[in-house]
Length: 276
Image 1 (tube, helix red, strand yellow):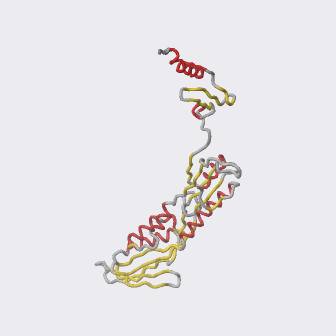
Image 2 (image 1 turned 90 degrees about the vertical axis):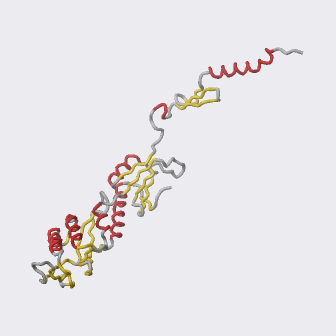
Image 3 (image 1 turned 45 degrees about the vertical axis):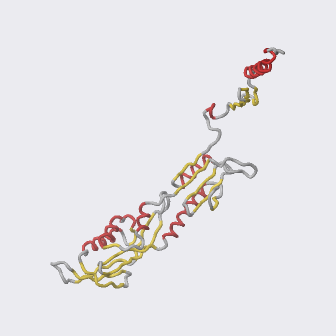
């Protein structure tokens, strides 16, 4: 028995005719002027003419912008936020984060457009806190004071410069004792060891406390801190240093003041924590 080859190939030819007809069919308009669907060898393909690949415009805002001060945070937030935007303050990380497209009370949103204020400590703050509680030799202590005259408030920078120069001038003496004066100063007794004045005694008075002014973060306010003199007379001679009073508390207060400034500039409340 023989079979017609035309009959065997008929189903394939029919499918080819169908596929050709589908491919040549005009696109179906799913949304007038925006969304269309058409057939391809792999199936139905949908095209959204409003997508960014056609318009060159992103379909939504996304990304994280980092700023360094409260004023910049408020300016960016005001430009992009809406009533459902959220703000979180994290005192441990020294950050304030805004989720500009946060979820609403009734619908989910992308939460992908964010603004972060990341505070940076000033160099002066890092240098003063870095030396806090550490003793230095006379020369090093004197140089430190000279390098930080702008931050010295009480006594004045001029008085502290004179003290620093006194320490430099007495770098080759033998300090023997120290006593506290009624004026609130610490008086050091020393004996000259140089060949010209060997054996000659002298005194050097230094304030027991002094006040400095520091700006903890770039763009933040300045704060007054009290530093208490520390010293040790030993085999290595006279060593000097200072101990700052509650620097961590000042740092926390400075961060809180930054958050309060943001809170006063915008309408949304600032929540304690960090977003997911």
